Image (cartoon, rainbow, N blue to C red):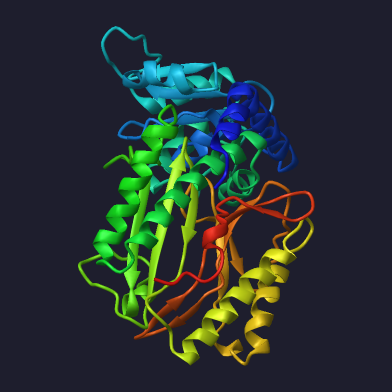
Length: 407
């Protein structure tokens, strides 16, 4: 597996604040190109992408106000004052609410937002909002206080923005990928046990590796008003006919000879998620399903060889599906062969057929062409990859787990 000490040394040399300030400048350029005077972000993944601050629990709003020209503001509850001052790369932190002796600019968060908008001269201007996240109440409240001349939904804009990662973010993804490899190796060792035992073994191994090797890094994901995710090191293994369920809690079922056990392993370091999946053959597959397994491996290889800047996702998809077609399995081709990774477990873009999204250096996604059989199971491997100048880097690469996995 990768030398994480080298990666950690690279991260330690990185000016984290500068890395995020460069992202702010890039976002402001996008805003100007789209006629935006300012944006107001509430979505946890977006506020983190712009500020580097993750409170884990979002029981009080965390807001980033970013003008197209000028410095951003991070607005948090007084309760988050110390935490945000330690983690945020945005220097201008404003407080709302009441907690201990901290000084707030307003008790109500919307009153505080109004004060910030007035200061940044954004009242009555063209404002961007998160249409994929805001409930009607918040949208109406922002309309009331901002009195915008025009509102623009920035949902896709933000997804496209966060899809391209800088070197600092990619190094964090390398550390997340290291943990997924640790978890997968342990899952494979325990694949003949119950789904639950296999899953638990992988999670325990990842937590032990985190404490031993990466204890100075957070392994949290993004919560909401009802709950937080302080430890985002997960595995769920499904087996046999349960694999096509896609997402289901593991149970006490023990995989049988001739079936597939599929552990799905996720890990997050400082908010950046990686995924690894392996189709583990229990004993031996029959000839028909062995042929399907071979086709999956060829499709995955063809897709990876197609990836490079300037190629569309649709072209990568076609390269994978052509391998299914060559062996007469075109009708069994999936509708997509992967998905974006980074700030969520399933990010933009979806690796769909006919997608016109053009690959850029720094884009991170999974490659996982699959074959699914209701009543029997599924066959797929999933790796997290990043687009490079000339092709791709498999972030979750582990030479011992790249092809057949038999237990």
